[in-house]
Length: 251
Image (tube, rainbow, N blue to C red; front, side):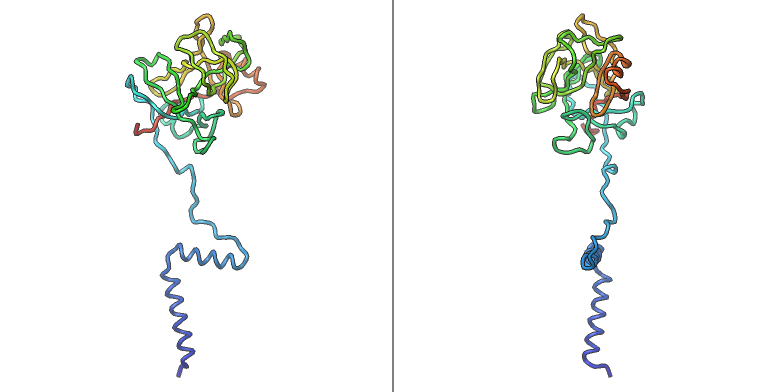
């Protein structure tokens, strides 16, 4: 006949098996981790880690309705690609100090910009950072006030954030000594087509608007009228890119 002590032992064993079998996965993992810690080991690897690449935010081009205030980020993409499907392969976005990852947070997060859609896509706009005095600007950092872009000119711009303001079509640049930029700047120089692609229409002192090209080198965005001259000035071959104004698809 089983003794009372043996009967109690069997009962406790059955109760333990029932508890483990019916415990939640989280509880079982907690127990496992407790055992690992007791043996001097680290906790078990989670079954599924968070991945920023799984977070796909749908984005689209501006609406194209004149007078609409558009708010969004400015994405940087490999040059020459189709506008369709460009929203998932950004090299980065424009932030306070240049190019920053799309999932960066805090001071390194991409900046939001805002503009009012003009009556024609041939018109230029100013890209303001909402709630602040800053706006995206073309800044010549190694030049005097007579900033001329075009073939044969070694002068180039950086796209930076300033508190400057120049009007559309102005052939004058204004000197800035600012938090994010130092140099001669123009601000109302951005033309945005129906796909959201941005073009930089810098106005030379003689009133001409040269064809410009946008490049990335390091963490900076450069604008030039002569790609070979830019490469010579930088001492390296920069990467050609396109930039797009990306708005949330629900906007």
